Image (tube, rainbow, N blue to C red; front, top):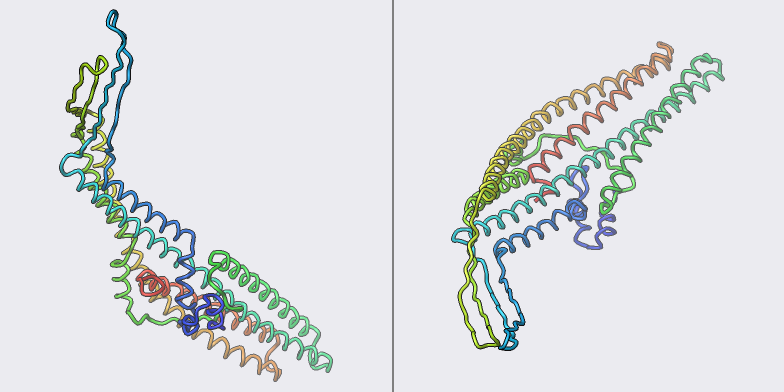
Length: 408
């Protein structure tokens, strides 16, 4: 991995070249930039701006100055023609308490939008984690298949030489070459999976520079923060919960606002008029008050019901996040044990394969038994890679969810 060079090329900033990757993960600076460039994150940031504008509109209110006027020409028989006009300037005013609720609704809207933006970034980080470990896992499986191909190719070569020396039967060569062909097919399939995983990762995160080959999968271990602490942080720092709490509170504010709106806002204004060509002029105050009815009552009932639904959804989100955190922590413990068991299985399978190889060279066992032992060792290594990747994926998810890695 030439991460330092990638940092220089990608960021053109000397400071980034000093950052080393943590284990098998890309440098945090590159990850943060890739996440910020995600369209979903940028869309969520734009919605924060939209929420700020909406909050400003709520603070100012939707009542504006209304100007109304008429200009007419009147003819009076025997008295002549007269130009007359009538002008009214008015504005509605929010009743006490409504403006405060509108401001609070606007503030909560911005808070919800910010939480949704952070959650969008969080989801992008989880997607990156999934695609990243897909690539690393495929790379490990390809390397494992390549090692098997090299081993089977050497076995085929030595078997052919023994057949030429009449020290082995043609059947042994056929078995060795068949095993080599199967190993090459396995390697080709692993290469396809590796290339597909890299292509998906590069397409979804084009701003993240990738090394030529996938890094090695690191061995998983219990996090330094402790699983219980991570589980607590996941709930405390969840932006999904924050958005649900803010939405519930905002809907409650809007319900109170709708109840107050059953009493309509009055309009006050000034009326100026001129009649009979200016012979009669006057000025007066103008007032209007809509009389609320069943429509406003229904809107208030609707807002109250939506507030109740938002509160229920808040509780559901809190339980979902807490439940997933507990499940992930419990699963990681089991995944770690499974990986340790698979690693022990690899040691035993490789020891058995080595013993079978020596036995076959000495003529103590058949080539078929040796090939079987080597297949078992290969499968054990593949199972260990899968178990290691599963534990590593889950650990990374826990740390992302707890906002101790990639997410501030």
